[in-house]
Image (tube, rainbow, N blue to C red; front, side, top):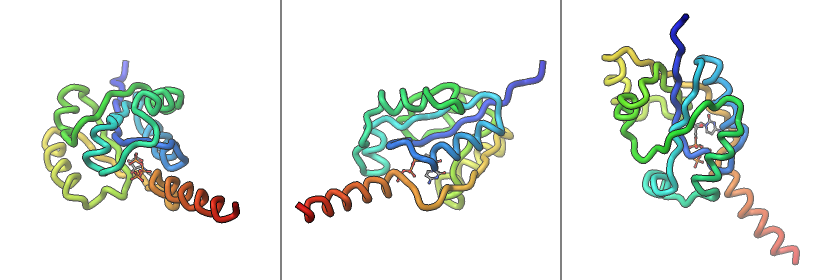
Length: 147
Ligand code: CTP
């Protein structure tokens, strides 16, 4: 039997949107089993300085209902190497908005040594959790002005 390729991707996946669907679909095409490191509410607050709109357990349920996701683990820090020690994935996927970032440059060096690939997938332009929140806030204002 051929070895299964295990993929790993991290994120908050808050207000699940088409950018999330696209990256998960693309990642799953390149592996046999996709694990999502789902940022906890506390970790999102720390690294994005944002409060999640949807709490962790619900974001997890939404992701579990997505056919491109095989399993989910909580992500509580940026220590992806520690996660590799635990999960032994073969490829880590991330949106190409992270390419050239200090975080991924450092990680590439570490992963190169143990032949773990980082694959940058195309970021879907024009949509993000931040964008959705902004639009809702703007529309809320419009509706108020119409009253
Ligand atoms: N992603 C993507 N295309 C988008 C938005 C996100 O490919 N339009 C990817 C990111 O590169 C990341 C993963 O989806 O690998 C999870 O991203 P996340 O930070 O949860 O979503 P964002 O919408 O970018 O959230 P925010 O606006 O809070 O930064």
